[in-house]
Every structure is written in structure tokens, then in C-alpha cells.
Image (cartoon, rainbow, N blue to C red; front, top):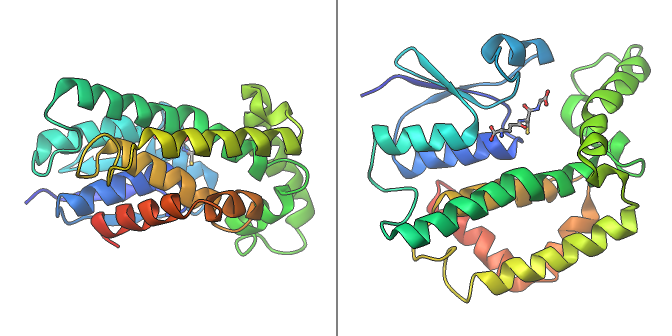
Length: 231
Ligand SMILES: N[C@@H](CCC(=O)N[C@@H](CS)C(=O)NCC(=O)O)C(=O)O
């Protein structure tokens, strides 16, 4: 049995993707949460981002590459469908969740109306109150700056929410009433969507939670993915 460690914070959608893939495959692992942003640089000098996985001493970074590696290590159950056309759609939806939906959620989390709550959620307990104003200004500039440079962070809040609402309609329609995306068992697409929507519904952006809650089919789907990937 391989010795596996996942480096990363539980709230990260990308860490969720990896942890749930490991649970689906019934692989034992331990997790290590970062204590400071310097940990990320130390664990992953190439991109400075989490998650990173170590399998018998060999490290891999980036959730998409990691889940691909897990499929090599333990092919059963597979994380994409056997049919290449279905697998391609699942991988593309995974990529859309990681590289597009993520930025919609980040743009809202770090916009002026939500940035304080987001900061409190990720670092509130870790920073002494005297240092908080300074650290908060720095973190808002660093992490909040990313969606601004990406572009979605420049949209007004009402426009962002309207777009997210429309995208959730499209997501629902694309599932075509199936249990999971394009197949009868979860794939990388479901793991990625679950991670993003769970972070979106984790507190600081109640408006997205309301968007999700208005769609009972989506709520049921998320519960289904949760159950099928370790609860
Ligand atoms: N494409 C990467 C994205 C990873 C990513 O953006 N992780 C965030 C946490 S949700 C991170 O490490 N952020 C720290 C930073 O940007 O400095 C993946 O799939 O692993």
C-alpha cells in the first residue's frame, strides 16, 4: 500500500477534488494543512499553489494532474468514463469548473462586500487582532487582486450574480437528468464541480448559496456527489 500525504487546506475546491478522489479509490492518506502562505511555496516551489500530493516520496502538484496520477496508481474505480467521447466531456467540464467557475466564485468572495467575511473565514483565527488590519490589507491585495487581474473581479456584484445564476441553469440543463455528469457514476467533472460549489456555499457568499438553494435538482445532485465520494 502506497504512503500518501495531501498538502492543502480542506476549504480549497482543488484539495476537495483530490481528497474525494482518494476516498472513492479507498486509498489511505494523511493531510497536512498550511500554517502560513510560505508553506505553499515550500511544498510546491513551481506554482506555489495547493494541493500537492506525495506518493511514496514522489510529489505531484495541480489537482488535475494529481487525479490523473491517482487513476494510474489505482485504476478502480476510474475517474473518467471508458467511452472516450464521454471522458472528453467530463475532462472539459472539470477544466471549466477549475478555470472558470472558480474565478466567478473568487470574484464574489473578494469583492468589497464580501472580502472581510472571506478574510475572517480563511485567516480570522490565525492572525492576532493587533496585526489584523495590516495582514487583511495585504491579503486582500494579494488574493483579491487575482480575480481582478483575471477579469471577473472587475464586474459589479449584481452582474456577477446574474451571470452565476445563468451558468447554474446551464449546468442543470447539461446533466440531462442523469445522476452525474454524462454518466452513472462520479467522475473528475463531479469532483471539480462539488469542490467549487461547496466553497461557494461555505459562508462568505450567501447570495450564491441562495442561487443553489433555488434549484432543488442541484442541491440533490451535490448531496449525491458527497455521498458517493466519502460523505
Ligand atoms: N489549477 C490548480 C489551482 C490551485 C489553486 O488555485 N489553489 C489555490 C487554493 S484554492 C491556492 O493555492 N492559492 C494560493 C495562491 O494563489 O497563492 C489546481 O487544480 O490545483
